[in-house]
Amino acid sequence: MKLLKINRDTLLKPLQAVIGIVERKHTLPILSNVLIEREQDHLTLIATDLEIQISAQIDHNESGEDFTATVSARKLQDICRAFEEDTLLTLDREEAKIQVKAGKSRFSLQTLPSADFPRISAMNESQSLIKIPQGILKKLLDRVQYAMAQQDIRYYLNGLLLITDADGIKLVATDGHRLAFVTHSNTDNSSNSIQQEVILPRKSVIELVKLLNDNDEIVTIEIGQNQVRFTFSNIVMVSKIVEGKFPDYNKVIPSNYQNQVTINRNILLHALQRTSILSNEKFSGVRLVLTQNSLRILCNNNEQEEAQEELEIDYNGTPLDIGFNVRYLLDVLNNLTDEKIICSFGDVNSSALITRPENSDFKYVVMPMRI
Image (cartoon, rainbow, N blue to C red; front, side, top):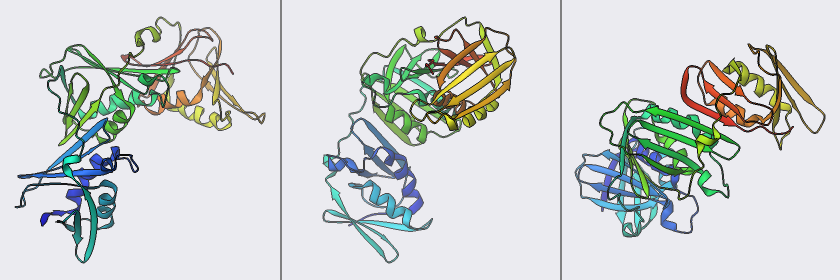
């Protein structure tokens, strides 16, 4: 039975959109498959890992019957990639297999029953809805997602706090050693949002960053009782919510620090990259020594090797000799685009605060370490 005749690129685009959450090996075999659905003039591809579901829809006006089928997502992607652009593919169903044909090439793929594909149940009613341009949401996520924990026993840290209200959205990520906070005021009057706080799983955040485009097309964010739905560019991503109480970020962000220095972000970034070459591989410690109009950056390792950089800065605060994990500093500098940043310090035992000049929408807090 002929199912579909389609351009290779037309099929590959939605397949690549959903395949990021497909596990190569899974205890439930059907989770390695993609569900392909044709309904009238629409073709939809769906993938899930039981926590996240991504569907991508394209228009397909070719005449033919509606159908559903599941095949190995990775194998179908590899087959599509193996052909040149604009190759015409034909998909046929033969008993429990899907035949993929192109020219004189033939591939026979096993299928599993479409009825067994475990879809995440649809959201009954959204409690909060907000709309935001894709490019803005992508930029906001980029500014905080690197601070999420990885496999922390405090499972609620392995994700990102999303706060929505009538004024806009806030995003917070922390691994217990550093915290990144960003906020964006809502300018879209079509949004309808009450105060909501949910924790998005780490995998959902990473996948969302990959899928979002840097443009002005709108993302609709709907928050339900136990899931969040993102709709944009013919893609719908549904993610379950992490249960748990996220730390009170307001208590972590310091205020009224008197020791401040405004510094060129790129100059500081490159200086830290160079000195980190000789940092201890296990602890990755770096010392910042602040004196009047001078910043020295020092790294050493177990082999008694040492790197030092000295930068001229405009600083008249209290002299400080304070240590940090250099990776935490590099992360924030790599994910900002400002020409300059502001670094604020308390004492040697207090966290540092990194902000953007004349802008209170972003805050990054990093705890000191003993070196």
